[in-house]
Length: 83
Image (cartoon, rainbow, N blue to C red):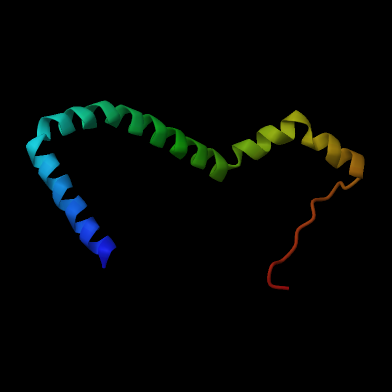
């Protein structure tokens, strides 16, 4: 019950501060927006690289094939999930 009361008080004070100091909030948003765009772009880029398999093919070119050749397996092995 006490956390609900403090939560409502914090929400009321937050709305009051947002209305009273609106232009400071606009300045803050203008300052933070480019940083948010940069970080979200980096996250999207990394997620796209992970989904396309570029990381795996780059890893294979750097030396993972040496381990495959040493093991003597020429044909790729695959497993079926449902069997």
